Amino acid sequence: MGELLDRMEPLLAKMPAVRPPEGHVHFKNKLMWTAAVLLLYFILTNIPVFGLSETSLDVFQYYRALLAGASGTILHLGIGPIVTASIVLQLLRGADLIKINTSDERGQVIYMGLQKLLIFVMIILEALPNVLGGWMSPDMQVAAMFGGNATAVMFLIFLQICLGGLLVVFMDEVVSKWGIGSGVGLFIVAGVAQGLVNGFFNWESTTDQFAVGFFPRLFEVIGSGANFIEYFGLELLALFTTIGLFFLIVYVEATRVEIPLAHANVRGARARFPVKLVYASVLPMILVRVLQANVQMIGMFLSSVGINIFGEFNGSTPINGLMWYLAPINQPQDWMWWLPQFTGAGHAAWEVALRVGIDAIVMIVGGALFAIFWVKTAGLDSKHVARQIQNSGMQIPGYRRSPAVLERYLDRYIPRVTVIGGVFIGVLSILANMLGIIGFVGGTGLLLTVSIVYRLYEQIANEQIMEMYPFMRGFFGGKE
Image (tube, rainbow, N blue to C red):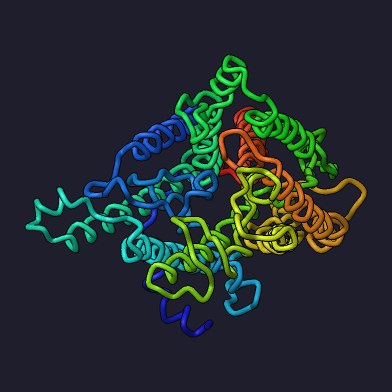
């Protein structure tokens, strides 16, 4: 694999990328770039794919909050290709199939180029099944403009969603290099925020003749005199879960072990390096859920071409077979078999319990594993953090100023906290999904949003500190 990467180095080094800033970007300019990309994101999620039939299915229906895209729009794929490429790259590195030293400039160029190449490949691989599987079907009226050639319209649809995938990649780079935080996190927050607003205020009616949104449904159920528990019980449970999860994540994000640091040359300059309970953040949960989404997409594609050995689908919902057992729990109706709204008709209670158990194992074990991979890939492990502290001129008071000493000290906390945090978030995510969340954004989606917003707040605070104390930029990873 190393020889192959060496041969591919000229190609990887020429991958298109957003030019990074040559020096420090002022905080106000970062805010401007972030706001501009966010505005562009909202515009693109409201541009429908030209030539797409209204009867088209959304294979990612249950993952929209995580994929940060909008069904049937230019951004139909959302961040799916980026996350899927990250999964593949992390698994390859975790298995030592590729060895890239990202501590030097050449290794960074190869790694970033390989990641970009994988993203481009994933855009094509995720766009093709949507078209070839018949889920994104062409509008015959538009096909008439091409002489009734539906294949031409399908190719046009394919090009549009591929273009949207490319735009997401470069918008993410603009935010990461010129703005605040990451584009992936920003888009997730935007998508979940839209889902929450829709969940609270949507006036559209469901099959039971009451509104979808929490408040309209509340008024309609009370006004009609219908059974409150029957028609509003799940929504009330979702409200309590949403509020409780919000405050719990804020509390957990504030739970940390703070390692004291002092500057070796600037007398009186002190700082603290926080090792949070959720050290790897909740972003590894995206990797777990997107991995599940890709498995379901493969199952749907096989079912659409008549291969039903892994299960059959009703639209985008698995109804039996292995795919039903591997499908994640997204709402109470997916496991509460005693409810009239139960989605698993024909399945016994033990089958539902098995499905819940499989989902819990995937979330908990996957959360721990991807948290470990994420820490290593993102340079948050003890070795990289020790080098970062050393290069910033900081040291732990009472300890010799040496990267090896720092690494041994950090090893007391980082590896253990990484696994504990991954398991904790996995448990919390599955419980939140089982109890339900307002707006059908999913427990994982709300976890991500609260955590991302909290960390964005911290990053804004760090940016302000760096504006006031420029010598701190080296510690926070900024440029002089």
